[in-house]
Image (cartoon, rainbow, N blue to C red; front, top):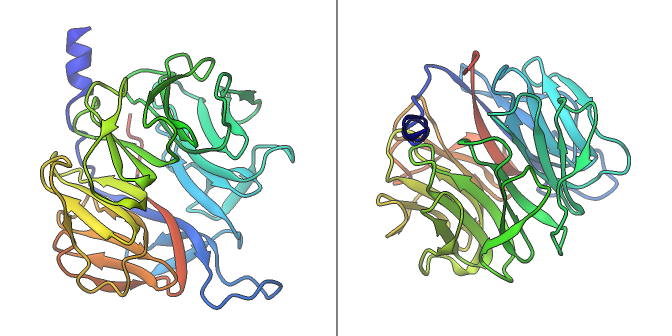
Length: 328
């Protein structure tokens, strides 16, 4: 057991090749009732250009992938959970008309076939890749759940964020208990790829909360972004101390010491209104950031300078680097 725990805390090795997917909408100057501009899922091609993939969809909030077959993605969308394959071109909806407004999705890496998603009315789970679904939010008083992650160390251990704080389940969502940030709206949660016991949670107006005890408890992580909304968190796969967060009013902030101190790195960004941020696992120094209704930006020097990368006029809510090939 001790050996297995040690292995779980080691950094995940960077694989040679990844595909960058993003989900969002082209919203700048859009008028309700007009034809929807390219929206939904976008893929960055090997040559560097962005391609709109699959159907034109007005709201895709988050993505995750099947650890046994990374060519299969699961997308949390406004009309249900989508199974996406063939480089984003093939889509299949896995849920019924009773489920709408999905906000996050997480594939359990230790339980083949287990997928969880959160939405405005709670959390649901499948253990057979979407053939059947069950409720996984029993005991949560407020069902609106914006953030959801599965602990990569053990099957069925979940961390969720809703309108009343951060909650932890050790039985696949059958029961939950408060882990921190009581009474605070939680917007996003991430687990460090280097230290499986280190977690960060982003909130609405109350900054960041951190856990160093494997997600059992979360405490305030300082004064960064207090009074602002933090929408995304990205750990640098190449450096255990480097973390980036994105939000409105702060733009992009980067820490080199696991969140103890932060620097705002917005030189070259047109506005400090950033939805999402992501480190490139195959290229040290490269990081992407989505500026609301401006474009996707890229930095080659850890956010010290930025240039436009495409997706003009978009609001990109989440980005995901997906490995090419089987990871197990």
